[in-house]
Amino acid sequence: MLYKIMDMHILLYAMAGVGVLGILGMAAVCLSYKRRVRKDSKSQDLKEKWLRYWGCRDERMRRMNRWVWLPSLVSTFLLCLAVVFSRVVLRTGMVSSIYIQAGLIIPLVLLVMRQALDFSYKEEHIFRSMAEYVEESCRQAANVQVMAAVSREQEDAMVDHVAGGIKESTGEKGRFGELLSPEEEEIMREVIREFMG
Image (cartoon, rainbow, N blue to C red):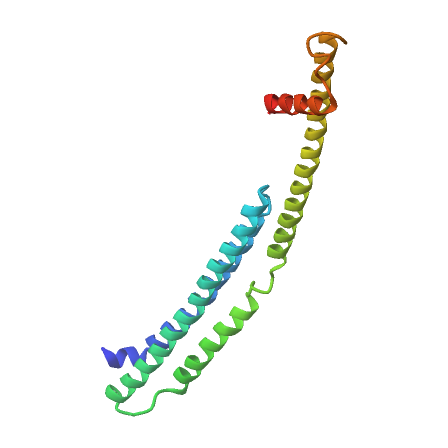
């Protein structure tokens, strides 16, 4: 059985299959990252979009690294297994050079493909979404300040209107006409503000 495994080069094909599986896995992770970025770019909530970009990138990077290191380790394990089988079963003490070449080439190809499909340097989406988030936050803060100034002006106009109405209804010599000194008028305005607030 072990002789047939070595004679049919099953371990060599298994090494090649693991290498191809690693490349396909990395390509799938890269495509899923690009699809996720496209999907998240349509989101309107800028803070959520920025946080999703970071989380998605980190998760996809871990997956990408798994597709490099696990097939490389399995390929190295199969190479060691081929060396052991050649010593024990074939009693030659040497493994075919094809196994050694495959054992060296597969991890190197996986590393090269990892660099070719790498998206960690493509951080423009993350930085663009962060810049949009910061700009939108500044815009919202400015809008809040403007709205506060406008509401303060509107409040002052309403207080003036109510105070004017009180003065007109009491008349010059009415009940409140003699009491309203400038200090007391300011107190009346504060009371009106408290009542409106």
